[in-house]
Amino acid sequence: MLLRFCCFLVLWNASAIAQTVDGSVVDSASGIGIAGAKVELIQGDERVYSVSADPQGNFRLEKVKEGSYTVRFSSPDHFRELNFRFQVIAGTNPAKLEGRLLPLGRIAGHVMDSKGTPLPNARLEVVSETMHLFARTDSNGKFNLHHYLVPGNYSLSAIPPVGLKPPAPEQDSGRVLGWVRTYYPGAADAQTAANILLRPGGQLLDIEIRQSAEHFSIPTERLPQR
Image 1 (cartoon, helix red, strand yellow):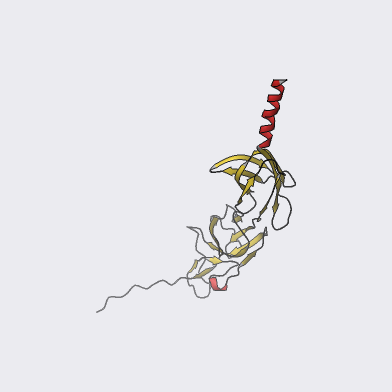
Image 2 (image 1 turned 60 degrees about the vertical axis):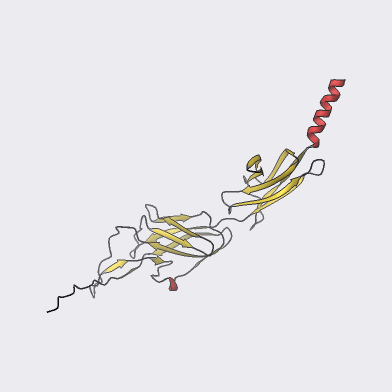
């Protein structure tokens, strides 16, 4: 009888200092739960509890010890991680949490020369008020920008790959042409380019940049003075 009573006390003490933490992780643009979102409880620099959200974005952590925690929500398709602190108090109602993550956008398309031939290994530069990214086209001249693209206005430009054969000279004048940095959709001057507006979770999948060519002046050799 005494042993049974002692076991009851041990179990009662364990439950008295533990609590349930549950809640949901949702897409801040749509309000839909994020399946598989990661939920972590951190103390100091150590992750002490971790769980993945179910297909509806709901999660539940059992037997969380009393104390102060930082909760971290994350998802590969959403911007960074959302962190905040909260307190677990034993003997009260379960702690309820909600994480709202900003969905990342995606910009994809291809880079071609003036005749419509795909340009492999062209360098892309993506600039907004908050970020500056670089990428390259694949062997088919295609690119896919889907990391860290938060909502905003983007400037997108393409730099021709090293060693690209120069375009043929102008037929009428015979002037030499050379490839130059080209801003979406096909401008050699950034002032005349078009910005790309990306909304939360926006998918712009058929962006096309036509590489521009400009005249190159060839300096003449200075003749010696007599």
